[in-house]
Image (cartoon, rainbow, N blue to C red; front, top):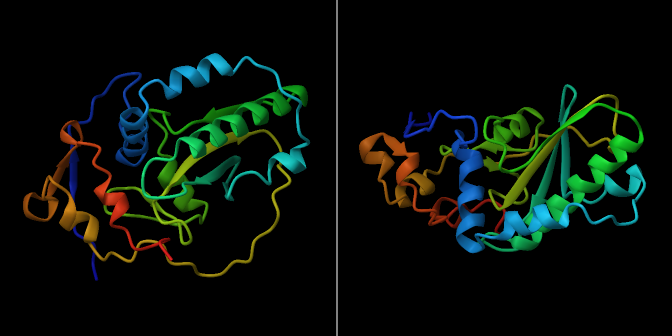
Length: 211
């Protein structure tokens, strides 16, 4: 079945605004669930903890992919609602990765779920971690859309275990997310990012990863 062409409008073109729907949805859900979560995390960032080895650290994400020099990391939720524990795990992982790379003298660039210009779902699709929903959310073959994506562009290699190259289906274009969205994109042909309520229906309704 061919995918319907949905137009996304209402993007704010500025230096700090999140322009990509696939990034914006997790960010909206985080702010709706706990508006102070990000600021608490910034305060905690300076606290030093014992560093793991790189081999130990790379086992923490629930899945890892790579496209060129950029690594993508999947941190799954435990349920349909935004998982603050997954957010905390993802930020702890990035903080330790940053410290390890600095200690090794490597150049790098970190991408968080709040990175405004970097399309993490699209990069994750290219890294064969799933495919995109009509809303641009990454649909992982095991976790569906219930996840956070982080990433890092890194000089050199990470000790990521090799995975079997098998065809894994994520989004099946069932259109449930389009049917249930309050903005009725099947009728209007568009989604206005400025009007998104953060209701998370496009995540909760997805049948992938619910088994």
